[in-house]
Length: 371
Image (cartoon, rainbow, N blue to C red; front, side):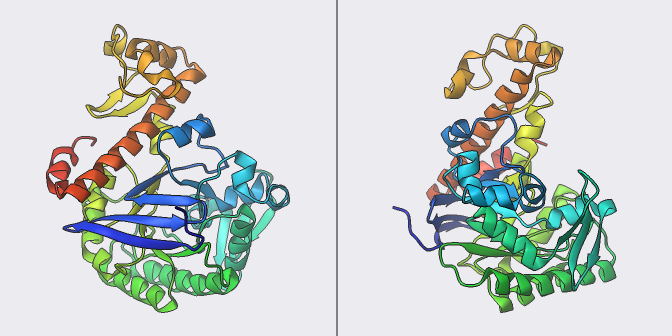
């Protein structure tokens, strides 16, 4: 049963690992959850119906890219991205904050104005203010809206990290005003602070004072080691509200996810399953398989004998090796679909093990499996 109002229920805990459920007007999301990334209104190379068949309950879109193409006017004609891309389950949208970092050569930050971009498509000037980011996400009709934040590159410079926290907190406050009152949608804040424990805690506390529906940790998975990421999660997640969803942005490998679940994170997104699929890399219960490798040339076994989506269980590793070697687009499509399906199987097993109290053993078995 769907609830009209956004809410979160914490169902069980196994040490720090949390089992929960997010309720939205478009469907419920079992947590820990993985969101396939559909930056421009498509999870690359995969049909929307097939994403649904993998058990994915929510996908991610991107404010900056959707603002450029197709643009707000077209999105408004379809009453949002759900109808435009034929996906009727929940959508979370990244606010554009990540692009402030990834496209740093094309933008500058003005705390009072926002991020001023030079479009990477046609060179036009684009001002993405906190208010504009929320307006665009409302046009996308996102179910979970992210505040606009400044996401600094990996650094130990406290001045840079403190400035990003100041800017992000100010923008978060402005985003909340622009978001207004809407019980059916959620607004998530984004804490910054790099690998500095005290700054992270400061950022979290300042955002909690403003009060949001969920809390994300940004500025991780930007070049630090996995152990550094796990360490900062271990130190700061205890300061996040127990009764609100926790989202680690842009993460990651199955072992990244497993380690972060172990520290109390609920939601993840990453381009890795589809990006890896486009290079012939498959994630399986036997670890990572590079299907470009000649050793698969005569391998008649399937990647996953149990996956019937698009008859994936009928394609041999030999055939996939051939598709990769001949640069056929079908290779990207089949391996990407396999990877998304595997990620959702992996999340389902994580949830089962938290529920049954066996998560510690599952964690120990798989934490180093995919590195």
